[in-house]
Image (cartoon, rainbow, N blue to C red; front, side, top):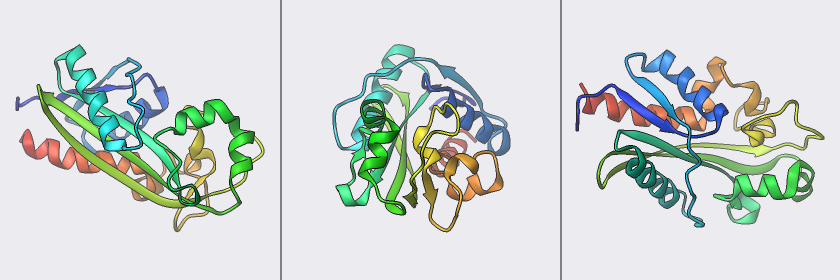
Length: 193
């Protein structure tokens, strides 16, 4: 592996990219992260790791530079993990009102972020961040949000939805992307020391 402190993060989602920028500023200031704005094709699969690995392979083949991708999803226990890897499509298809019809207030759910890092041809590492919690009923989105589920997902041991924890010290404890990034950077900085 090259002794590089510069990586790409492949996402067209500005909400995800601003989370990683905030993370790097606080915890990995020596690493330069550039956005690779590209909508990567997603495998239709209920295995989140397989999806992330496929995205990482695709991004590596396009860029040929160290690249990090993620796949995130909301896994509702009652529905055996659905919408899970189809979370984005569920929100697009059903809208907030449709999703609200499917859940009870205090509905148990997990939010999982899987990162995959491609750093050489055929070399992909994966890292996960899991946040347990529950869903609450809301009538409307507080604002246009690139991460819509965070407006009604409440992490276990907290009382505010995740959207209101972003950028606060609580994000460090509860944020699934934050947890996955911590696992990634612990590995990456050791590899590149």
